[in-house]
Amino acid sequence: MKQKTLKKALVCLVCGGAFTLAALLGAFYHPDQMLSDALYQSPKALDGNIFVVGIDDRAMEDIGPYQTWGRDVMAMAIEALNADPDCRPAVIGIDVLYTGETDPDLDAWLAEAAGACGNVVVASVANFGTELVTEDTGNFYLKDYSVLSYEEPYEALEAVTTQGHINAMYDQDGVLRHSILQIDLPDGRSVPSFAYAIYQKYAAANGLPETLDVPTDQLYRFYVDYSALPGGFYEEISVSDLLAGEFPAELFDNAIVLIGPYAAGLSDYVTTAIDRASLMYGVEYQANVIQQMLHQSFKTEVADGLQAALLFVVATACLWFFLGRKLVWSVLVWAVAAGGSVLACNGLYSAGYVFHPLWLPLTVTVFFVGAVAFNYVQAALEKRKISNTFKRYVAPEIVGELLREGTDSLGLGGKLCDIAVLFVDIRGFTSMSEVLTPQEVVSILNRYLSLTTDCIMKNHGTLDKFVGDCTMAIWNAPIPQDDYVMNACKAALDMVEGSKALSQELLEKFGRTVSFGIGVHCGSAVVGNIGAEMRMDFTAIGDTVNTSSRLESNAPAGKIYISPEVVRRLGSRIRTTSLGGISLKGKAQKMEVFLLEGIEDGAAQKEVLP
Image (cartoon, rainbow, N blue to C red):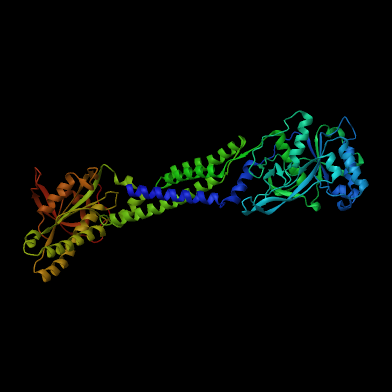
């Protein structure tokens, strides 16, 4: 038992460790991210103070192809938004890069329009790559995510506006789940993200905290909690509406207005966690990040090491429970562990913590299925082992019925049954054993016991026990049988018939022979597992058993003695001869004993019921 427990513990530890390592190495990455997106990201109620004005298809139809636009278009759009001092946006975010100088007059116009009210934030971008870094010691290494260059607005526009980078760093499956809070430039400057720069300007105008405590990793990335699906911040207002003055100015009062590409041909779109099937324009992504900052709904991504440790402990414990357990309990624990972990992840997300929602459910499910399959195979092997062992004592048909009905059919502790009992003993065996070698004695005994066993099994009996050269068998237990008294009589007749050929063979080989004395009786007896906890036998006890044994003791060689009850039940189906009353050991009165001579041809198929 100790060795079995140690083996089970080793299997659980190895499997738990293997799946934990697989999770850490990213084996579950793609399905885990899909589940996390579905579980964590959903549309929320918007405050209504962030608006997207699109550089859309309608604007390009009214103004012309975007590539032909001068900077005067954006200048006029900014002037239109700031035209009414009583209905002016708190922040205007221009999600367009204006690097380098083009037309001096148009450049100046845009800078003047942007700087007039001091509420404009413009985009910049850093170019990342791998850089060879040399340390003071002379050692060098390749550094990923190094800023190789930085593109910012032309000088006049930079001087009158606030800048924020629009860099995005996708996850390895190409989905945008994180935002970069800031970028440290090689010259020592730190550039906030476009969304953070807009938030800070909005916060300054509305008395909100300008600095946020955002949980980030070493690359200043933080998890984005999306608020709106693609199109959620878009009110169908186009840049062409601003230029034509056809927009409700009061709608943008003290609001955040974002102007950016909103047409498929401009290729400024991303795949986001809130809707992997639909593309979201970059300006909408910025709106979602700003919304998150306004609500300060930041999430802390729990370290993979801690999650792996939790996975190892829980999954290993579940596998330990599943192995060798009944299916109903395993299903219950699996449902609690798998379903409960998903619910727990969802609750923890609401509390501000991001867990891998698939790690534990997937591992526990695999362990559950594997354990159920293992338990089934083990049960099948054990069933086969029991079946093969039990078939040495009981007819195969009875074994099959027992295995179908389960252990309850064994009547643990004993139950009262009506049975037929057969005892058969070898006559002359003791005297023969005195003149033969031990090997010869054992050989003869085994031949006779094999014969009695075959006759019992052939007639669907249960081999109860061997007691020396005596064999005991019962019928109608451990499960009910049809015509069990007749089967017992048939087995007795088969034994007498089979002993003839065997006796002749032994006579020729050893010069001696033996034969059977058989007794058959039927009636009530207690049948079950009887004995002590450390050693028990499946047997029958009671007067029926004793009477059958006494009949066998009185039967001469080659004869079958049966009781009046057997004759009563089988009636004309058998041929018998009454031997009159015989005194049986332990019986106060004589019992009429019958000699069983054979079975009538075409007799009825059922005995008389007791």
